[in-house]
Image (tube, rainbow, N blue to C red; front, side, top):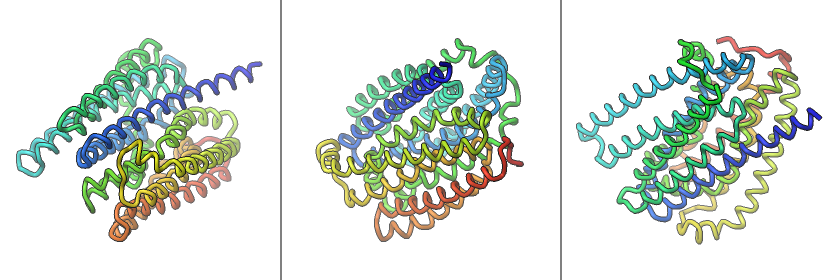
Length: 427
């Protein structure tokens, strides 16, 4: 009976996580479609570049705090868990405020020297406040996911959706809808972050002023995790900057617009992955690496099958999507779509296989692997773009993803052979 109740609870949490990610991905898709249809390629390109930079900040933070924080929270009693989280939040806030102030100062200086236009200064300012709000929200999302409070997460993200889509609608009536959409994202993140912080304090998930020196305690492991995430971002999202630098900002619109077709697949994969980290952590502590790897392989296989089925359906509907939904066609859009399908198909499997390495805190090894994969991606992307245009950036990404998943599979297999007991990689 207890086993049945536990299974039902896990299914409800999984359903909430997937529903939450579906809501967020559908919202991002709707915002992207609205900007593609009503904004210029340049304004949409600025929006993509800025939101990708925000994603880099989120990746760094999630890598630094994510698994290291969960591993330390799991064995602690509730009151100590709350103090640990409070200490991390206080120190995170200090670092973020200093970082934003430094960035805004640098942007003002470059504008005064005539190195950037007023439009680019506006994008930089919108990016700064947006990043600050998003990182505050993402911190509390990590805390909620660590405690598997997916219901509270879904409620806060409903606030996020309403504010963001309302703000995007207002932004479309301005002369700079890309900047307006960034400010809408900032307002939405601020509202959702406030809601989550109130819920966390009421639920004693964050208690008092917290312990001091928590960032230093996580730094030996978290820095490697953040570095690995940043390197992976280079070939996972850095394509937009490579395209903008090699071609132009308008070309970013074509690559990003075709990527939107894969977002429904991404929403399910991300929803599953967010819940899998604390779930797999529990498996590892109770049952060991062999059981974890076996389950991750089954989940990865199921995700791969789902990706193939989704691609077949989307391929048949691509004419309607570009013609009737987006009201926009792009050069070589079928080629771009096929390349994105290959990249996402590998990503959904890789996301599952790497959990064993993440939970065993093999962040230094993962960072080196990501560096090799990113190097291959960048090395191939530039010459490929000279021959294939924007699609060349995706050729490099696909090659990097192949190397990455092959390396993760090898390392995970080695991890299983090394032994059953949890350990932390020497730094």
